[in-house]
Image (tube, rainbow, N blue to C red; front, top):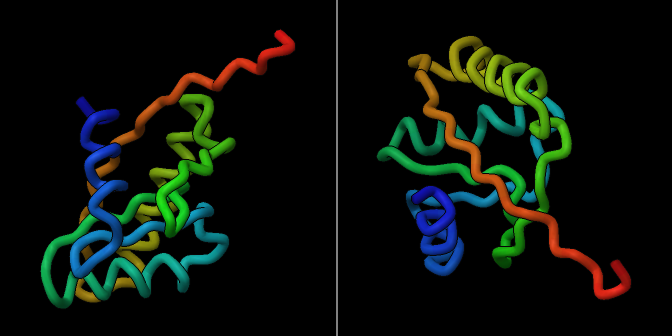
Length: 104
């Protein structure tokens, strides 16, 4: 289900309620700016590890349960500490099999 949803969102492209971030934000200010923009106008979706033109970049740090937990905890703390009023984010992860090279 999420894989199909992600494909539809990528095809729709960025807009008032959809933002693509190619890399995981390196600091809370970068992420909180995007989150606050959605929180002050309408709800929205931020796709982390999706380039502006749609390709999936991937999140190496989210490859393990511990990495996903750390990422989710960090994003939740940014949303509660840096955004006013604080919001509670919803997390969903999609997994994509790596393409095998023809030399494998």
